[in-house]
Length: 128
Image (cartoon, rainbow, N blue to C red; front, side, top):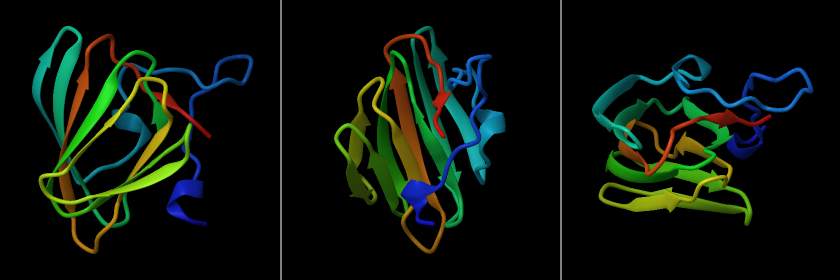
């Protein structure tokens, strides 16, 4: 199974549809997570992924994600349209609200990156 085929474990509502959550910490593991800023409608988080870790398929209802790589390499898979984007240190990618995406470590060492999220109410809608 390739990285863009692995399913996320998604909380479901009574109808079986993915349910949004306000805090995704319990849905996936990372080596390190640090919140650098948080204000109503905006936040900056630093994440470190080991080569085996990923942020599973998900989308956000009203906020965009802007990824900025500090160290290592990321591969971000997006849908609608389907695309795979490789990022290295100093490179960025912005994913629009409601666009499904999966974040993986594309290297053999840990990858550290910032995620700038806003402007709007944060949620995390896991996909299967």
